[in-house]
Length: 471
Image (cartoon, rainbow, N blue to C red; front, side, top):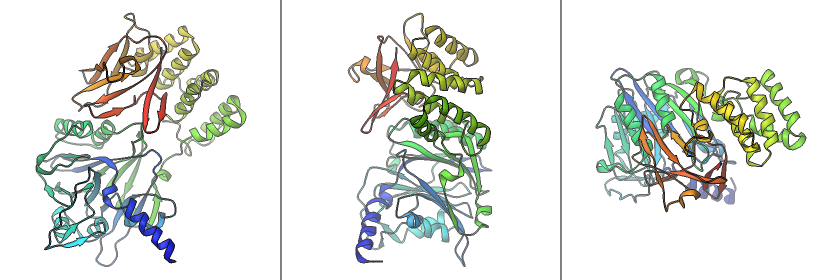
């Protein structure tokens, strides 16, 4: 390789790919005594792309899989800089980002700048063996992240360049702050995972998926859960989810995948494609009627190619609403409703479109129908006109949080925040809000500013996302 490209490559790897730049995420271990599960949410910028790598057994090296980011021009190298991995013995590893803590090297140990995941997955079967491997080195680059390691026996450890925290409880969760010395900080994701783990004694796949869903960071936001994993360590089997869609699982059995030889595949390619960009392109060219016709055709002829079961089509409709194209949004949503009359979310958004159009009677009918099927339906409660003239916020999210505050232009943002009450598994508030369009969001535990995860109408400025509400 010529000198200049080689120098650029080195600079790229130094700046972006060492573990101190590991993404935010939630990792938890659920141990029933008979079966050990790992749950893993990977949270980053919505535009980030990823790849899974499969490395079959070679000589004395164990077979394993890795997951990594993708970066244009460096895709073939990214296996050397994994976010995490799993080997044929059920040894799991992944990073969580934390605030940088400078590493203090031990002069009796060798300094190691290279990441350790590949070497450990090749050579180790257990957490004990992994820690023995690590003990020979100063992990001088592991300053802004913690490396979580777990095995099929239920043993686990959390490693930083300065410390190792070993197993203390049967179940465990980890997010994005230093846990040395038993330290705890406000983090609704870790508290939610811990709360739900403590309620269970036996764990099934749906329990792990439920915790992943409860701790996922949702759109809209500058950091979201891009992929999620529920891993049965004893079976070396992963249930993979993409972009917060927990209704479209993909199962990967590591033993079977390794039999296919050395290969890799983009995570996005395991899943049906997002139809919204296709609809947007058609709409920009030909308008709403051909777009509706295309949607109907693809629904009939390309049901496996595109995902028709998630919110992608609703996102397209919400974009039309946010752009002031209310009639087109209504036409598209009316077509969706004819296709799927029992879908409460479709009915909600049809009601919201009628609300934006000023069709109060039709909007009220939609919300009434949704609430008849699901009394706690968030959007219908939010938009339905109440006798008290108050707006109802009733959120099932952030169950582990200690405090949730509603803030917006109607509270002077932080001047007069509304303290929501925790009631029957919901965060609840009733608020008098003047007529007109408003911006709002939620402040969770006084730290996390989050847009409304149910509302696809929002405004975005820089890394600041506010939800929109028209009354």
